[in-house]
Length: 330
Length: 252
Image (cartoon, rainbow over all chains, first blue to last red):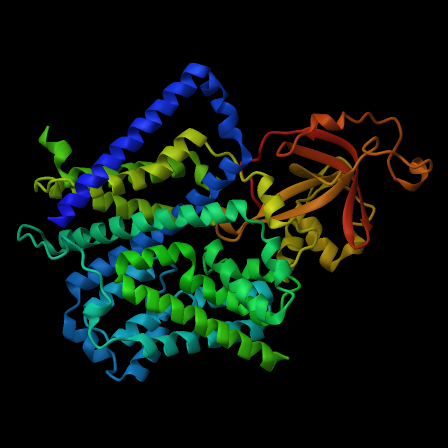
């Protein structure tokens, strides 16, 4: 009943917004401002916003699609007992296996979310699912190699790998609940089986579902990321970065709002010349774990309470690891 | 019109619209405005998966699920980027982005050797170099470009009375684009000191176009001499002419 009431309310709001917009358009048309539309379109801010938004989407959609396809295949083709055999049941050991799973399913940011959701649903230990979710965008051959290309220093590659590994295993153990239902959000027509479908059809059936849900959230996330990236100057963060502790914090925030692909962020991190190495490492880990576009997609796949817990613990763990690391480094 | 009340129809429509979007950016080559050229296989793969989803979508159409307001809302979310794409007709990342990101006049990545090995074409006495190549030389072999005649293409970007030439360097997509820039000076640009002719290696009798003629974001081709001043490259221009935007607007 309540849902129905809410829906009615929403309907009224939407109609109201529609009326306001059409009134505005009519008004603009009458005053001749619409002729200036060409100039509004050419506005560099709008151009930059559009290009960055579409860039994130064009980059993300293929990975979401690949991720959805893998997820659909896991759902249909892999029997549940299989995964239970592969994964050790202990929290600690399964989290370690999970964090290296990226070598097996190397799907870049966005793509790993449907896959890890499905893996957890299929009954792998929750701690393994969480550490896979956090680690896979960093601990995979492509990302580590591109980090080497950007810095030509094994120290940075090792640093990125180690901190990401420690963080993902730690959080996998820390926040994993016993019951997978505490994590997974339920989708409405997920278990809607149709006998007429062949196995392949069923794979695509699940893939479409995953794609439409994650895709929607990716658009919202990309819109936010693009707004931030267009209007906030990077200099703000880089000047704060002169202080050791603040620089870790500001790099964390910058990585969240920039939403870069994990294959590319090493090159951007390298351009922050004056920052200590540890802040750069934290920048390259925080981004692939909790950038704004990912955060929004997390909410599509997992329960709200779990996502909040995940975000807070990742943020704090990285902050503490960052400070600890920068004192070791001197 | 029962079909317009079917949720499956809207799902199908979203997949259809995105399939055609991916098809159109691949066919027109427009995807190069957004992502790296070498990213094309991923776009193709995405397109193929979408095609299969389309096929499944048709099968699912037979089943009727009544649409709710929430479904219409998510349909609008999917429409939003596409409408933006059609109305704004994006061209290339504007130099406004350079302002927000800060222009790099030095090349920071250590991996410069590759761009030094690229073949360099010549146009008359001028060497055709990209801004990335120039900055790579600056980092590793500055003596090889100091005093050389070069021709460089890029976008005009004016900052604090400086006239700069800008190209964006891209690793994956436009979100990670780093603006690379070099300074350009030309005769008549600012008030000249009396000994301008002696200190600046510009040949006489070359007409420069009014500087007002060049606006930010204009694509130009600059011919001139390279001079390294305070570890930065300055090009003393002999001519600046407007050109069309290159097919690949970014550097990789």
